Image (cartoon, rainbow, N blue to C red; front, top):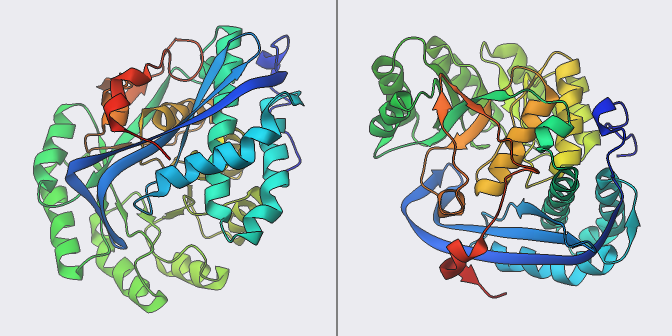
Amino acid sequence: MHENPFTDLPSLAGIEMDLVLAKVEAFAYRCSTDRPIRSSFGTKQHRQTVIVRVEDHSGQEGWGEVWCNFPPHGAEHRANLIGAVLQPLLIDQPFPHPFKVFETLDAKTHKLALQCGESGPFAQIVAAVDTACWDLVARRAGRPLWRLLNGAPTVPVYASGLELPDLLEVALQKWEESYRAFKLKIGFDVQSDLANLRTLRESLPPEARLMVDANQAWTMDEAMKRVRELAPYHLEWLEEPLACDRPNREWQALAEHSKIPLAAGENLRGRANFNMALQAGYLDVFQPDIGKWGGVSGCYAVGKMAVEAGRKYCPHWLGGGIGQMASMHVLSAVGAPGLLEIDSKPNPFREELGLEFKVEDGAVSLPEAPGICGEIDLTRIERFRIRP
């Protein structure tokens, strides 16, 4: 990415954007869960995260979060990468803008990521550092990030992660909590997928908005059949029906065949790939993940690009509270009618850090604390910490 998408924001005038970092730290955590996360590609038995803390020479700090859900020991690996690779590129190096941090790290780690075949993990650690730098700048300015980026005070949300055995119980609970949109995991047995969807549609009030996520489960032929079977349920979108690296012609053919809007993006990396998907015309909903690629800088740019082209920006997130809050700020700043994903399952790296929020009529109000998420006290989750 070369074009800075933040240059036209008048609210940044007079804000100190320069960064010289004195510290970059990564903290890895893991805990078991009573509610495993099932997807079409496998089951996740643990919650894990890597939290990044950056600090400038004045002592101001900023926080970010790395996506590290897979493999089972991915947290240690990402934390080690930050210490071995990113710290030397960051400490005492002057950057005129958080976007320049992202651009520099992306460029300087590119060949190393290719050399070791780990483009995903490198993108994830760069994304977390970018988010932490934006948090630092906003804290230093004494303003929440969404205000710094001219965002809206509320964003619509949806509950994701709905699945058996407590599918209906959780969905009804979330409706009582004022959620008005819901996403069901599919891509398993066809008949159970349809039965679960039918249960939701018949049990929730008729105004409930429903989406489904296949997690790249199907071949082209299977996807063509599934979109016909799913059509009667009036879905807002069908997420990742195909593998993200399938040729554009397959995605285009499926989009032409489907009455359901197609969504994807959590497994795309690089503004060029998002732009290619936009130009190919098959996605109605763009879903970059702030902890997988781009951080605030990349996801804001992609979100703006998508909505200016008449598409929706609905950020993907399945992790702890820092990434959740950062996703909320960016959706607010992009300024279009998208939806924020909120995992319906318990997560100590959200609840125990005090990073929860109240849903009212399908939306949440953004915090007024400086930065992304207010004060962070890692002692609350110290018992889950793992030493890389």
